[in-house]
Length: 115
Length: 488
Image (cartoon, rainbow over all chains, first blue to last red; front, top):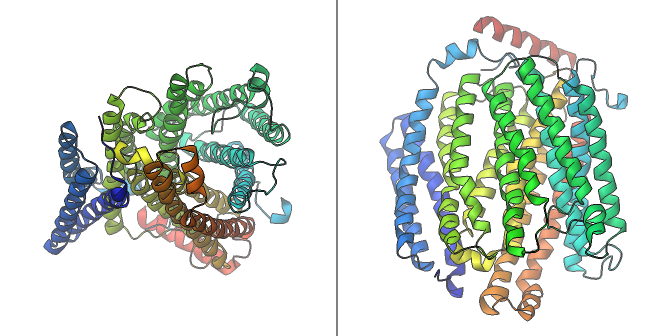
């Protein structure tokens, strides 16, 4: 049986959920920016964001009384959020080869004069 | 229309049809806001229009107008892009035109019936002619059938046009999505006396129809818009369209489970819904990577600043409205308290505006640019304050409403659900709580800001680009020629 959050923890649970998605996005942002600029400092920020994401996830696990198989799902979620930006970055690099060349023979409806 | 000095002569049949859909969408958008303001005011002055225009009717028209104007916007957007995409003229323009007038007449009749026959017996006559009684999809059965027929005509026009012309990746995704758009709506049309079974299928329309087929439709429109506005190569947008659809379906279809928590379905839906709902923001977070990649590699130079701004608003609105506001209360342990409160309304306002309203508005600006003879809508645009103010007011207005509803929703969840245990007395205690009412007042204030933004938006759409100096048009033409030469 799922045990609901305590009334006193509703706000905490909500904020933890919101912060998870925000810091998940910050992690993705800094991760991509570090790859783009090739700077380790951004990578540090990325993994710091991921660390905060993990902290809020743990908070959520506690206040929502997640136990048993729920914890396995949370572990999968943490792994998924960690690896997804890596995968998407590889896709970005893989889907943008010889971009300038593609651009010249691209869409007929495309306005010219664009960079 | 001649007063507006729009250039209709260069429009192809598909684009002419699209403009009709856009006009009705804009009018219904206004109706949605008007009825939203009345509904908001009824929270503050409960006796307002009592027994004349009751809250349940006002709220129904508010939500139905939104669903229908967005549908009009999407159909218009597809008609706008289809001929460029298929590289041939629209097949079945007359049929499409007939469907447009039937659909519009049906919408008008349904709204008039909603407003004039507000109370009646729950029998087959009411179901077929007045109101089907299902929240959000109250349209009577005859109108339901009409919607499906119009979507099927739309499907035929789109599929036949692509078959006659060029078949692209966007075309493939779009055509398959339209099959689902017509098919899934049927799930909300049959009657069953078991409320759990009824709700089970009803959510297919609300979640899968609106959140899955519409999202894919938006993905297609976004892909085409990026090629138009930013000149992004087709190969890239199509590849990403496939990736987006795969990610979205991977998490979104079973994410439907978060609606099955409390309707009497088996307990395993708590796990399925919880897990896949937690995965639903993954595509949105992952897309941050792609946005950063593109922002770093390109400078976003474009000739339609309002459209670009609304596309960016779409990306952010979708992320916050659907991602952050959705995940905030999606797991069953918290959803037990928040389900169906003003918290849901807070999520709904930001998610619908971010994911769907903003991209429709972007398409209107793309269309208006064409109607103005393809003049540049860039930094040299006169009266640019109008589109910027409309953008700011609409976004601040919706964000303000979202925050205000969140405060009211929190108070409602806390008092009505957590403390009072969902009793009837608890409901009224929450509805009159101080913070709940303050949230409602602020919602109304931001509602007025949104309405003002809408007025500015309509004014801007009617006048934008009318006064672009000839010198700017000439300079723009030269820049574009120069661009073509450098590329060639």
